[in-house]
Length: 339
Image (cartoon, rainbow, N blue to C red; front, side, top):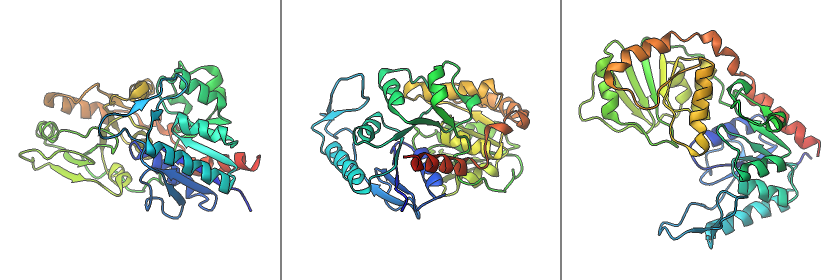
């Protein structure tokens, strides 16, 4: 019987779970997903819920100060229980491989438990000591984006150790853009968007229908050309039906936009390690998006939409791999079989 592949899923945002689930569904009998609040959200894939590791509500959480780790709370029962659950799962299942998306601490736990560890490497400046050490400890690194979108400053040894796997999304829908429609996507891990600002943009662009999915506040007066949907169970279909997509530079949204090659207005959000800023810079280099540092003023939107619609789809077509999920599963299973 083939040994399991454990796959740790970080709780921030939706993208980590989405790509883990997409990969695991290629061979659900091989994968076990571990993460906080993932019970009932992994379909046919076996999963294990972990205790919450967030700081205590009283604000009294103290962390060990060490450059080798990013987050090491002291006297935190959730951390103790998480470590115990992961260690017990490793001992019981004897996994062939442990994929970590993402946590330096869980990466080291896998290494210390004698399991080959594959680490998901995100965008941004990851030159700090903790990232460098866990990158060196990893069997391989996985980047959920095309190599052309990588940071030019990435060290050569990190690039050599990285398997670039663009297209780690659910299957792209066959729907096509439905008229002059702008879709604003607010991600689960972001700060949301101000409905009043969106309403002002709508009034400045009466020739476009606007739709918003995700956490968007309701404006006092909603223009006729604005629909605020809220949470959507099928964001990929909404993206495929848009003429222009507006949103942040998270890997999940960027991958979904590239999957259907839609014009993209990118508004990178503040993230640790300049993750979204570096991804937005890469999109600019590739002429794959119109990038703005903050939500534009109403008068700027007509020209912005025109610039986005003038982007050449041929410049971005190669950045997505339609078989990326299958390729990722194949790579991980091949690595597991070498153990």
